[in-house]
Length: 157
Image (tube, rainbow, N blue to C red; front, side, top):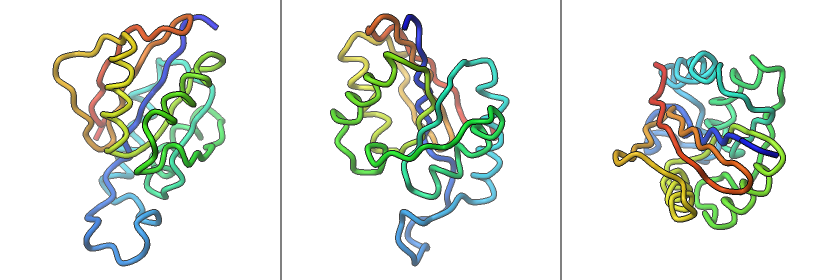
């Protein structure tokens, strides 16, 4: 395919897990999180991608809904992006997709560093300061099946 992009997005702010009484997968974005989600539209406007994927968790889906709507795309859900998913399986799935398309993928704070580690182990050049704040995005570039580099974009709001 040539150059492809993986926009690895950590879900936006969703309030305090401990104060949420329902199943955690149903926890929605907070007001701050909604602003962060809206901010992704402008933050990622110059980066090409044709698919939007999300963990089925409500806070992840809500994080990428404005981004998908701005590009007239659907938010697809993948259990491999859920909190606690196996990073190796998730990375293999993402790499297979990236051979055909560029995509945005919204996931959780446990998977982001694990996926970055996997990309680095496969040759991706990462900055020394590795962060993954809520609502932030890592833009990873891949060309001809090889990871090239990654850039961190903090949350927009």
